[in-house]
Image 1 (cartoon, rainbow, N blue to C red):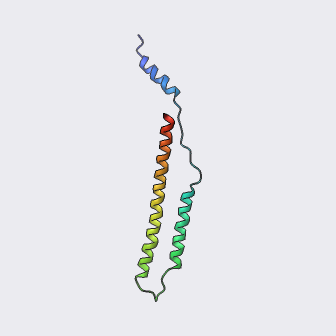
Image 2: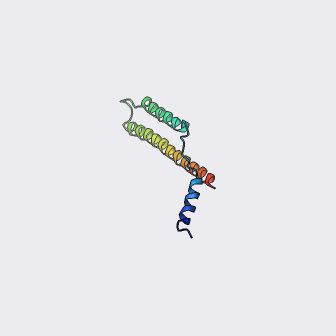
Image 3: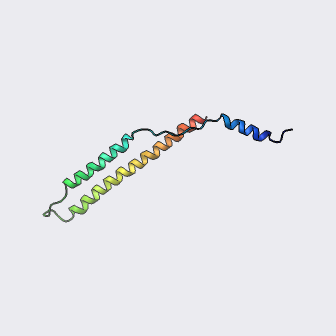
Length: 97
């Protein structure tokens, strides 16, 4: 009886399996949209910058509003990337079956 039979069977199976390489999706339109939204939030914040005669609380409120808007866009984009990875993984899993 051959001692390398198990190894040979394993190697025969491995040769039939294909290797898939992930390919980029192309332009991430959602990411570009978020960038435009961030620029828009900054421009609106610059336009709304308080005048010296405005109450002193306007500056912190404006900075907080613009900051939270930009952070929100960033969090949504990270969630988009995570969802995209999960979809890609599910597709790869389906192809393996």
